[in-house]
Image 1 (tube, helix red, strand yellow):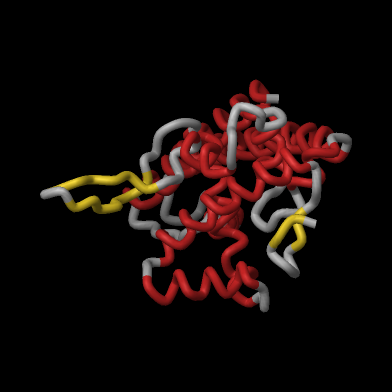
Image 2: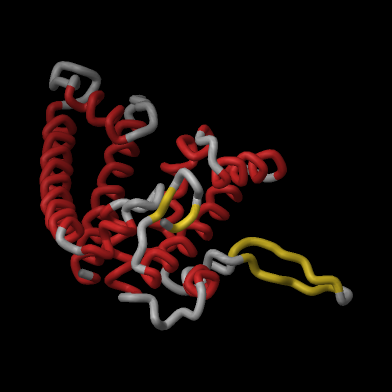
Length: 223
């Protein structure tokens, strides 16, 4: 499972590099495209050889588009395999009851920590993922700064992406978790709130795995 995730992450990195190169090629020729993969795909689909690009450049961009499509296909195949495994794994199904935890997060967490016996509590898992604040002491006064960013970089990235995706829905929910997030956003930047939510997701994931129960969003607790 970890090997599948590493293979997928490599393909995603290749796709991102290819997309950035496509944007740079277009920008060098005075063509600006809006943010997002879909915006770029839509723009490229409408291009033709009679436009502002030379015939040779148009052929090059078409070749890069073909590479992009092939990477999409290979990533989708890996996603299909991960989703199939998650459907047949009880622990993965329980993890996916947590907001912001999908197939990628669930399978990666189980592959990395198993049943979570290596961690005495959820905070230990969050610390291992580098999602806890660093502490600096100056003049005898401790001060919390950014997260440590130690440990499993890949899992930390997935949890932060999951937290960012779940944040809008959770903010609107009449739950204790939603109230906690609204309080966070009232006193800190949105990105800091996303990381704090990722920290909480890691703790919830540990509790779900260790207790063998599902997550109850209505009460923001384990059921």
